[in-house]
Amino acid sequence: MKSYRVGIVGFGWVAGAHLKTFSELPNFQPVAILSRRKLDPAALKAQYGLELKVYNDYDKFLADRDIDIVDICTPHPFHAEQAIKAAEAKKHLIIEKPMAIDFEDCRRMVKAVRQNGVKTSVCFECRFISVTKATKALVDQGQIGEIYYSECDYFHGIGPWYGQFAWNVKKDFGGSSLLTAGIHSLDTLLYIAGGQAGPVEEVFSYPTTNPHEVYKPYEYPTTSVTLLKFANGRTIGKCASVTDAMQPYVFNMNFVGSHGAVKNELFYSKKIPGLRGWMKMDVQLVDSGDVAHHPYKEQFSDFAACLETGSETASNIENAFETHRVVFAADKSAATGKPVSLSEFPKP
Image (cartoon, rainbow, N blue to C red; front, side, top):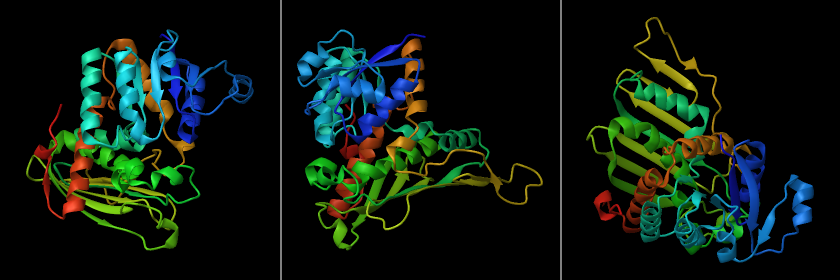
């Protein structure tokens, strides 16, 4: 299999985790970093054992013929223009979530990718962790029957102890609780339930905020609960995005069907004779908000395999856009106090 040369845009906490992952995979070779900071190539080599070119000019970075893939790890408002320019330079793309802070920018990104024929992987890495894979397989195989209730929740305390806090609290950088963080749980819910239930047709979202003083710098509500109505007319969903939690990290999954259920690592089905209680699956849970524990290795390995065959990864920009449509509809509902149809957020 070919080794793909990667240029990383931005060099913060997440980019460091990406770089470490790339260096551990045989199908990737990190070759360059673009950063506003003055980075020392010798120091980078001492830390990562890699020869890395350092750029502070994006046009020169994109002109580097040694770069096959551009990995965008900058704060959210910069994603759209950087991704569009990279697509126009015929670079494949890895894009940290969210795709962008604005719905129209997401549409523009999808159009640029289509027009330039590049491959993409948006960092919805929870699609690639084993608990998600196992749950989706059980649902798709009909082991719990027809899903009528689906639930994924995100509980995390993103306070000043996180480096991203300084910029993430701003409305034009973080966007919303659901866009900046809970989007992981929403995407997982849609990925697992969508095969049976179809796309989301309508959402209703309720916002609130933890009154603790540590979260006062946020310019937007730090908690929301979003209710989902799916196209099949039978399945409903619920996604809580709590980024102001005063508790350990929790990523909750619960899918209830006509013949059984899956709750995190627990599985029960009436289709299995003699089963008296929950079965426990030996799977990796989504149990940490630390990017060092995120399943980037599985996501990037899948992307390399797709690049090799010309196929699309599960987290390609088209699929990721569908999740973002639901997020922006939910945020509009939270702001207006009314249900919002997904038809208000058209596809490109």
